[in-house]
Amino acid sequence: MITTRVMLVVVAVLLALASWRLWLSDEGLREVWRLGRAVETQQEQNLTLKQRNSELEAEVKDLKEGLDAVEERARQDLGMTRDGETFFQVVEPDPDEPVED
Image (tube, rainbow, N blue to C red; front, top):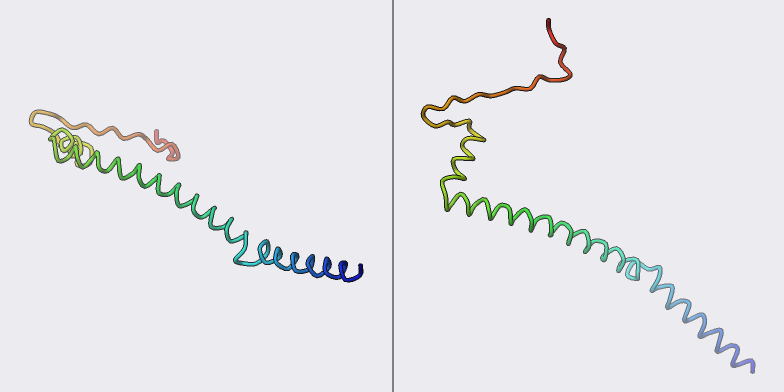
């Protein structure tokens, strides 16, 4: 009867030591949880980059296939106009700047 209790105590101590390593060591479940969070973060970044790449691919396709996209970029970025057109640039006043009378 005493030997059975001693065996149970020894088994319980061994089980506690084994579970301590699983729960609390650096290679245990904390590391698994940390890696899981890192994977989720990376997947979110990958999704964002995939969307950005799709937009860039569409823009490159437009630039390769038609002159409308090139003309639009020239008008927006460079302020280019066609013959006979007049370019007007409207500048909004800075709300922080005092108005002179």
